[in-house]
Length: 323
Image 1 (cartoon, helix red, strand yellow):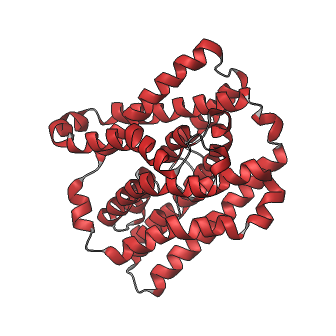
Image 2 (tube, rainbow, N blue to C red):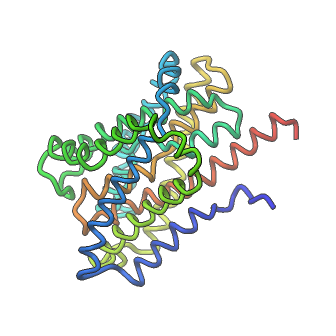
């Protein structure tokens, strides 16, 4: 039986369960200390796998379509941050200062890879261009996001300068990423055989990091700071941001004369944000007591982007098939 497009998938449900578990049974004491080291190792493994999955030829083949990639990246790293700042007078009264910073953090993150490519394929978009754009966005995000965060969200960061953050990001995220990418030829066949197992490790690592982040946030009193009304406001804000980003990138792609396939690629590549990059980076960029608060807007946005984008992809798929 096919899942209705408006229902969350199993992984999204697991994300919610992880937050509930961290809220009821947060890690503390010696367990929290051990979990911190395990989480650091899990993040390194996660980015090693990201690097190993990155097909170099797809990037080389896609570089010729620079206008499309420039449009997608402008939405990811320019339009989203501008929305966050321009709408500040409206957002602050709704969610408070800490969650507003979380919304800004969401706006500064790179685009997602897996779901953007998968949805582009379902909708009949330009899959090679989607792979290239999402991969480049991830690489740029590792470099750009720390500078944006330290320049604009300094009070909650755990490092002293953008250079310190970039060094930490490089050591904890970029180095494993590059190692995985350059070792890809030696492990390619093994990765292909272990596809489902690697997916389990990939997603399991993210769940572990989310549990660690929310445990620290719960111990720090997140649910005393975040009300139900704030969560509802975050849902509304996420929907507005998602709608405006889709309108921006899809409208410009159409105005610039891109084919329908490229318009689809631009929509799913430019209007989504990466949970897989955002959660691990939050552990490096922010002190533990606020990391959970910072990723809460991202988790809500992640759920909504999947629901809305899946519905759109299925609609275009049915139109292509004449259903």
